[in-house]
Amino acid sequence: MLRYGLTGAIAAGALALGFGAAAAHTVKATPDDKVKASFDIIETRIVTTRDTATFSTRVRGEAGKDRPDATGKFEGSSVYAYVWPTSLNSADVGFDKDQGIVALAVTFHPDFDDGAHGKKNRAVWHPHWVVLNKDKACTGGLKVTDIPEGAKPKLPETWPGVPLLIDSPDYPTKVEGDTVDVSIPLKLIGGIAGASYDGVTAGLKINGNLHSPLLCVDDVFKVASGDLSLPGKVAPAK
Image 1 (tube, rainbow, N blue to C red):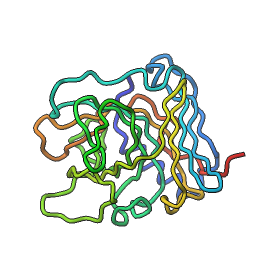
Image 2 (image 1 turned 45 degrees about the horizontal axis):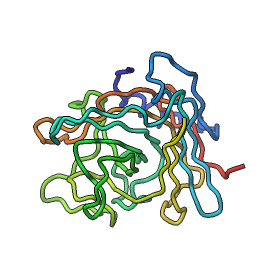
Image 3 (image 1 turned 60 degrees about the vertical axis):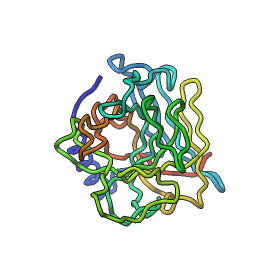
């Protein structure tokens, strides 16, 4: 597994975008035998039709085959994820403006449920919007943003009630063959046209002491671009 911090790559990616370096529509990656086949990204893309945005990642092996082992408890438990970091603003997906890095993530975590309105989801791959920020306490350099006690930020209707900037929308999600697909109505995503993106597979971990940071990026399996420069551009499907 590839293990390194993402914060430098995030900064480099933002700088590259500032100079107009992101030109490709899809992001393709060279297969890497050092990465588990189910997380070895070959291609990631976001395309739009008249009314839908489809987030898609294709891997070298069987998507979704590898899942975290259940521990029987919430604290210290693991999350596996297929992630699309984007240039979207947090306000585009229902949070306050300028809260951090907005990413869509398809996750699996066998030790807890975090569906909206109490929905059970620990036994299936399912989507989340997350807002990420730097935190040196995290092995991967990033965390899902904590909500401090007493704070009352703007939250989406499908926020699952945990103290994190996370959303649990019920988007159609397909994990089949070598591909992970999520279909989202365009009316639910502001700013998606022409947005920049990348693809990441990663492991996250719940803090064993249940303190902030509660949910850290713990292990990065692969970054499609290699440097998280967000080289993809959302474009209409051909």
